[in-house]
Image (cartoon, rainbow, N blue to C red; front, side, top):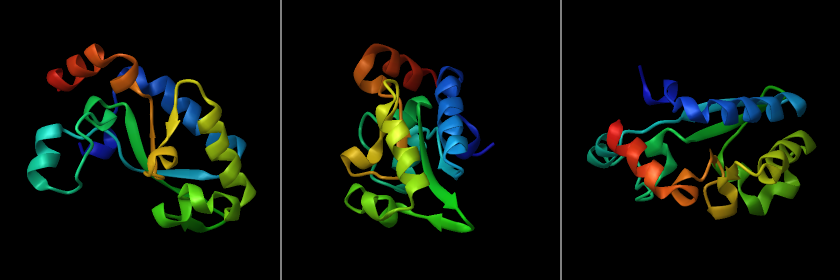
Length: 133
């Protein structure tokens, strides 16, 4: 099983919300990454992760957007380009931003990231999840 296949079971309702927001806006989300083992990621040096990334707890995804047979990547999904994106993609991102349990990474310079801020809302539980993986 790869890291794309794993998320914490408690993050599942939020993944279902993300899926619903995509469906409502007639777009597809391509999940590139979800859970990342902290030790593995640091040793492979794939990405310089945030030290308290929600990926480490299975509470985040990295994604691309598919709309009308075109895939949108990080450089296109950044906040400064939001107004230039097709209306359905803007609508999807706005739904994420309006959701009280989710954050869009474009608001902190990671436009292909969506998470639930477990690391901020409940640091003790975040530590528990990370240390149990």
